[in-house]
Each structure stands twice: as structure tokens, then as C-alpha cells.
Amino acid sequence: MTGRRGWIVLAALTPGMFLALADATVMTIAIPEIIQRLDSSVTAVSWILNGYNLVLTVLFMTMGRLADRHGHKGLFLAGLGLFTAASLGCALSPSVAWIVVFRTVQATGAAAVIPTSLTLILEAFPRARQGLASGMFGAVSSLSASLGPALGGLMIHLGGWQWIFFINLPIGFLGIALVSVLVPRRAHASAVTMDWAGVALITSGLFCLTFALIEGNNSGWLSPLIVALLLTATAMLSLFIWRELRARAPLFDLRLLRNRPFAAAVAGMTTVDIAFMGTAFMLVIYLVGVGDYTELQAAYVVTFVPAAGLLIAPLAGRLIDSIGPRTLAAIGTALTAVGLFLLAHMERDPAFTAAAWRTALVGAGLGITIPSLTAAGMSAIGSAVKGVGSGLLNTARQLGFLLGVAVLVAVFSATVHTAVDDSIDQAQVIVDRQPLLSAQWRSYILRALEDARGIDATAGIGEIRRLVHPIEGVPVPPVGTGDAVALLSLRESLEAVFLEEVRQAFGWPFYTAAIAALLSLPPALLLQRRLLRPDTPS
Image (tube, rainbow, N blue to C red; front, side, top):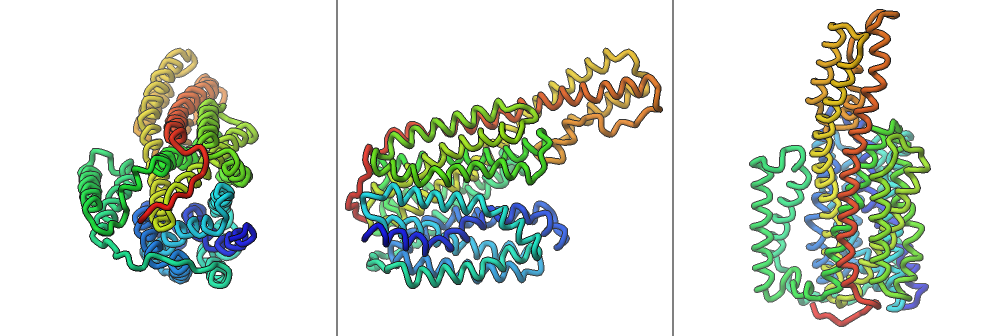
């Protein structure tokens, strides 16, 4: 197929890809309004996001195998049709529970759209331009993720949260029409039977694992619920491996993992996305809670991650075709780690430009690494297993996203508790050394400091703000008294102590993300020097 045909196929697939990927982030901006309009809670509404990500993680591999069996174009169209229909259900939902139900249906459609998109794009571009094709897939992915919150904010401003879903209808119909007309239908391995026992095992195992990752920090990692979920996930995934090694027509042929470049791409994709999603999550909290940014300003800063990836991914794709994925993946992981290290050393109240160029460096590294891993992994396997291979790569990405948030929040939870104790110890010394303070106001302040020990900084940005302003609720003494003068001086000194300790506590999640990025370096060095396209049997 000519290079021109590849661009036509990419353009046809873009509306559907945009919907499936943008809807993973579009709801973040709508949560406050849905809570208010539907009289719900943060916990309930959070499942509008969590349910979507959970279903994606669980179904990617199954959808990829179905695509290999029934055809990638057909499954893409079925998935996009289901997604579009479910969007109407979401928009008309009378309660949060119904939105969650229709969001899971949406995610089922998206789980078919995303892996088939990658396979169709790679098939449309010639062998010599597989790196470029992977780079363009990465660019569209970055653009979709970055525009999701902005599109959600615009729809809420114009008509309310329902229009986040109504807007999907014309885009979905456009995507269905373009793919129906412009994307050729390929032959598929319809004679291969579907391993439904394997589907049941991988679905239940990934469901338990994903649910545990989502709820681990809220329920406690050693709570009976999380331990039971992790044990069940281990049992189901172990049975899945046992089953797949013996099945005549496995859902996923585990021999593919003997393919060094493909296995390395899966491992690298997981660790680099731990760094990506965990960092994006923690950076917003840091900028708003400690840096006194507005939510919109923080969103602009974080947008530099996908924006930089969008700009550099097409160039990286061309370089992958010319010099191979190994060197570029290694360079990308190093750049990502350096950017994360610099974020850990960011000032307490960073200027916009100081935060933006650091996040752009992270985005540039990811814009090189992710297309390199994608191109290397997909070019290392045969056409008969492209769908399930794409499904596994996307599953690795989703698990990386979930692990990133879970691990970095757990690290922050541990470090911020230590920071609070250290801050209170330092603050008590400062209070004791204030000679103008009366016994009454001294007791007020010391009580407020002790109350700060009970603040859960992982519960939200509001709690972090309470923490870094520890004596905000102390009664105001009469003007002109020694207590008034002392309190004015103490407020600034104590806030400086708490802000600095909490800033340092935020540094450790960024260090952890940098380590995760560096863990992608060994897999990067195991990739092939040049892109391959072997005829691997299914």
C-alpha cells in the first residue's frame, strides 16, 4: 500500500481514536458539576472515571484477539458504534449510577477501537515507514489526551455536563462513515477458535488486579478487601498462564513473549507509563496545593507533557525508520528521567515557565520513547497476531497508568506523614521562642499544630492547603496587643516551615517516577537495532 493510502487511513481513524482516548480524561473537569447537579458524592462520581479505565484494562487483550479472528475494521466499527450509542445513554442518564453503567459500555467500545486503530494504521503504512506510523499514532494519542479536559470544560461552559456526551454523537457518526468508506477490509484468521476459558480467566484476573490498584490507597493495602483482590488476581492470572500453555488455540500465545523485542516493548511500556500518569496526577496536586496555582493554570502546565509529545512524536517516528528504535528509546527514557528529576527540585512556588519547561522535557522524552516501543513491539510480531499484540501493549499501558497513580500516591502518603511530624516539631520550637505570646494564645497555636497531625494530605487539595496553613483557624487577638504582633510573625514563619517540608515530601514521588522511567532503559536496550517484520504464526 502506498504512503498516501496510509495518511488517508490515519485521517479516517482519527475521529474514533480521538473519542476513545479523550474520554479517558474528559470527565476530570466535569466531576464538580456532576456532584452538584445530581446531588452525589466524590466517591460515587469517581467511578465515572475509574469504571472506564477498569473496563479498558480488562478487555484490551480480548478485543485484540477478536479483531485477529473477525477482522480489525469490522471490530473497530462495532466498537465505535457501541461507544457512540452509549454516549447518548450517558447524556440522558438521570443519576450517577446510570452514568457509570453507560460509561462501562462506552469503555467496552473503546477497548475495541484503540488496539484495532494501531493495527490498521501499521497495516496502512509501508514497511519502511512503520516508525512514522507509530509516531503518528502516538501523536494522535497525545493530542486526544491533552484536549480531553479542555473539550470537557468548553462543553460545560456552553451547555452543561451532558454536552460532553452529546458532542460524541456527530464525531462518532463521522468516524463510522469515514472508516466504512476509506479503510480497506483485510483478510482475517476466522478459522481460529476463541479461547473463552482463557477470556474468563484473564478478565477476572485483570478485574481484581485493576480494582485493587484503584482502591488500594483508599482502603489500605493490607485491608482484607485489597489482600483478597490481589490473591484472587494472582490465582486467576496463574491459571490463565497454565491454561494458555496447554490450549490448542490460546487467547494469547505466551510464546510471543519469547520474542525479545516484543517482550521488551511490553515491559518498557508499563514502566514508562508509571512515570507518565503518576507524574501528571501528582503535579496538578502539587501546583494547586503548594504552589498556589489555580486548577486552570495547573492544567495548562500539565498540558505541556502531551503537547511536547505531539510535536516530537512524528519526528521521532521518522528517526525510528532511519536509525532504529533501540537508540531512540534509550534517549527518550533518559530525557524523561531527567525531566522528572528536575521536577523534584522545583521551587516551592514555581513560575509558570519554570514548571512548563520541565514538564515539556518529560513530554519530549515520552514522545520519543512510546513510539519507539510501539514500533519495535508491533514490527516484531506477525500479522496474524497484530490485534492481540496491540491489545497486550495497551493493557501494559493501562496497568502502568493505574500503577503510577497508586505507587506515587502511596509514596507521597508515607513521606508527607514524616513531613508533618517534622514540621510540627520545628513549629513548636518556634512558638516556644516567641516571647510576646501569652499563655492563652500559645495554647491555641499548639493545639492547632497538634490538630495538623490528623490532616490526611492524600484526601485532596483542600486538605493540603489546610496543612500548609496550620494556624489559619486560630482566634484573632485584639489589635495592637503583643499576641497580635506575635501571631502575625508566627503565621509567616510556621507556614514557611510547613510549605518547605511538604514541598520536599512531594519530591519523593517525582524521584520514584524518575526511577520508573529509568527502569525502561534495560528493555529499551533489548529492542532490535532496526525495525523487523517477521512472519510470526498465530
